[in-house]
Length: 406
Image (cartoon, rainbow, N blue to C red; front, side):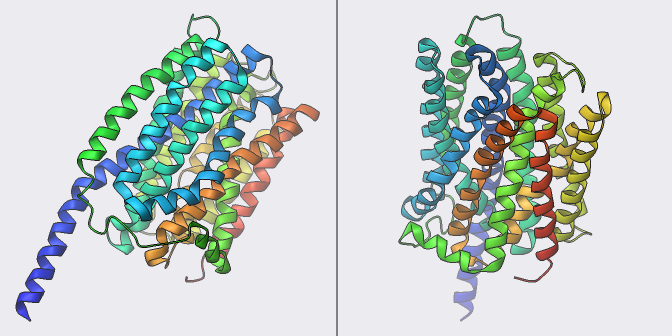
């Protein structure tokens, strides 16, 4: 009996050491896909200029990108069951690299549909990585520490969303290169970096205990919708991503309005880094706050604060209107990790399926910006911000509901 206990202790110790090695890699992956996703906000105004797009047409960038989550999320969960977490990450990274390389022919052809196609391929790879690393972070530690680990992971994601828009503004919006050439070159450089990261992850492919989860039909994840908590969590994720992406996508044009701050697109893109920087600050602060405040309370508090800030921005002009919208980033900070952890609470071995289902809900980033863009074309960009404002009301409702135990 003692030998069995000793053997179990050794296995657990080995698993703990593996988690210590793999967790930093998992955190770095959040930085990677955060960087690439936030670059959409930078290329959108440039593509709007290059192809004389309306607001609704401009949001097709996010529509194609986030539709990738809707199509690929559940197959990604099935992929984890077939080849494991680490190999799934490698597959996603290499697919992202292929998508980035497609920007070169898109730039050469100077065709907007070609850019949309390249973005979809990138999004498919991003989806595989995101569906994989969220439950991976959940598995690499104790259940009690899951909200804090996920919050820190998404803080790493926020570092990428802060750095990428600023660098993207310098390379793409401030660039002297004519047309879409610099966009293609920028994404080609990203493809090289992604390939190197994939090689690093491959080196750790056998370091995670229980890397593969037995499963079968990828559509079985939909049975989780029978649980009210999961169902409400999926809806909240749809609304959150939709609101966050909408504001991020429209912020450069919004800050350029004479009624707000009248900035150039390059200057507004640098303030966009502050919007994403708010997510970083809020997530780092959230790690400490979660020691004293329950996760559901924080979701409800930040949801109500985000609604108030958007309302203030819509009701005012000048710097107040601009800075209030930038400050919404602070409120968005903890929403993804906390909605994810609250919705997937108690799923156990079905966490990967739950992750796939929640990532399907990220299609909100495709739908809500498109609705907002269409409303902006028929009314005004300021009036269209009513759409993300209403999304935050739904998030507030989920925070109140989630106070019930799973």
